[in-house]
Amino acid sequence: MKLSFPKSGLRNPANSRELYLRMEEAVDCDGSECGRAIHDSDGELEPLPPHYHLISFGRFPDAGPRCYAIGG
Image (tube, rainbow, N blue to C red):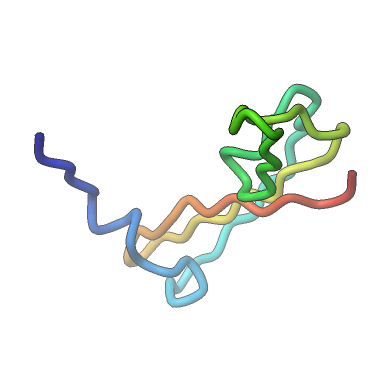
């Protein structure tokens, strides 16, 4: 199996000429998307308290998206 990623997914949005930010509610997030994952003793992901996601992406060149947890 071969994994591939677009170049835009590897670039840092802060290095783009245009930086865009978006906030979204993360009521049912288990932390796998935003990097705040907590595992129980069985190795399963535990639900996190409600928080928000800050999504950043850039244009010229295309970059991201990157997801950061806020609050919770």
